[in-house]
Image (cartoon, rainbow, N blue to C red; front, top):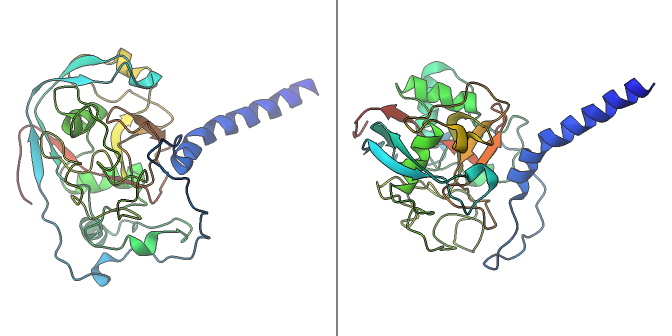
Length: 296
């Protein structure tokens, strides 16, 4: 009898632990003085999967990759959370990364060419999807596997966590794309009334631009990267070209999104989620190894 009770209690503890990252994404972090308390959440309404070709006549944004030169950069911060420490100087080889988050239009081309499942709510319900149908808004409701498959189809890959941070932060250790002074309206967040109720068309917020010219790293949507999440990996990773840990339970998400609140919105901030999770706040971009800057 005691053994059975122990097993039940252990199972409940595991389920509670697994729910923590989901609650963190859905609820956000502690409000700062810049923010007003959120309004009551509206009841979700049915939504069809996205079909960008039928909802907009705007021209698709031109795809572009930005070359990030080989060399050192400062990763992490000693002023952040435990998993952002310690601050270290790492060295990466040259790579290139998409200037913009992958858009609805781009992802739909992949779906049409391969028959891969469409982006959209798994249960066909989402509060804001009707406002996120522009062909040039970032694609959302894609899992880590979906993102990886798209990048592979494009002849690319997901960026490593270290590559993503260097591309968004530059080499000088700044905490936001624009520098070290916090700007509550510097990105498309939920911290202030900035005119964007949901995700914006990629590249809309001019201040959310890295020293290399990569857009929307601080806000708009959170982004899948290649790595498995390991809490102590910033401490344990090699100093040159750190790759993903060999295994894990969660994949890493980097950057903030339009629903992000609170003070934990530095470029060094890390989030995690199971790799088959899909949500209207999560998108991605791709990378390639070596020097490359081109329009596709």
